[in-house]
Image 1 (tube, rainbow, N blue to C red):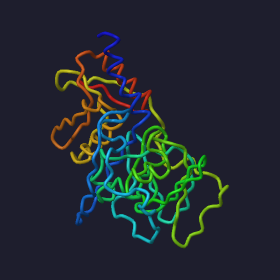
Image 2 (cartoon, rainbow, N blue to C red):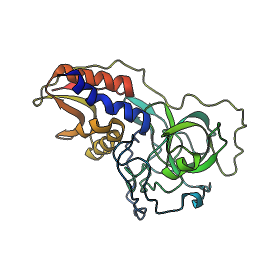
Image 3 (tube, helix red, strand yellow):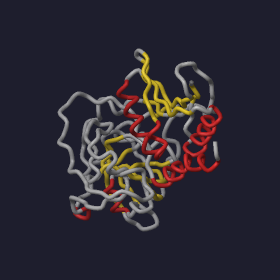
Image 4 (cartoon, rainbow, N blue to C red):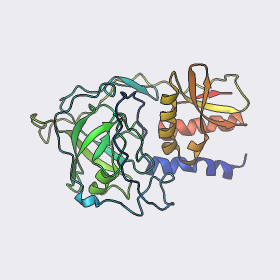
Amino acid sequence: MKKSWLLWLLAPFVLAACGTQAPKPVVESPKAETPAAPPAPTFSKGGGYYKDDGPLDTIPVDLASVPDAIPRHEPPHRFANRPYNVLGRDYVPLAAGTPYRREGIASWYGRKFHGQKTSSGEPYDMFGMTAAHPTLPIPSYVRVTRPDTGKTVTVRVNDRGPFLHDRVIDLSYTAAWKLGLIGSGSGRVVVESVVPGVTPLPEHAPIQVAENKSRPEEPTVLRDVEEKSGHFLQLGAFGSRDNAESLRIKLARELGELGERLTIRSSGSLHRLQLGPWADIAEARRVAEQLKSAFDLPSVLVK
């Protein structure tokens, strides 16, 4: 296959790594009445964002007038605070009321997920003041500050993620807009827990670095499994098709146009999330290496 074609194929990784946000985890939600869907945005296509997840052309609300989230006591979500595993890494959510402070890169997610269910079961409202975090309790509240500008917002954590690029929090569109992160797609912030009745950590308190219990990283193992014609890169296997579908949607944003090759192949009660197919096994291996290098995303080669 010509080198120019390969460059075209792998170009989305560069865009996705710079301008997209990480996927959220698959967490079962209780059966409850679903809130009304938030207002739909109007947008134009194009730019360095995955499909329609970039800045908006028409905004149905006055972003400057949207108030910060007001911290209040809420019972922990029944399902969203259980330990879970995403992309080979174990995450253990913090107990309610645990002080937290960490500096790192914040990203944001927008219209691609507007109206879809979050890990709490609530519909994602890109015009609200919410955020996704790998281990903070759901629900909980955090203050997010840009150290270079001093801008700060308070958001309610109701979703899980991000899981790639060493990012510490995924903000709603409005929260990112208030912090001036829309154009760049990401930026350095300090995330601090806000618990009603609990004194915040001192400004110069140690910043938390490790926030999950991870399995030792293992090298990507490529092995062949006889199934159908063509070569696939398997990214996960699930007992629930809903969980496989949820991760497929979220990874599609990370992988850009290559994400359109994501598919779920079911056999009995096992549902495999795979990327492909490729007729050339060498090409499939090259893409696997790109996934590992650009996204720290392990895969298994299956046929």
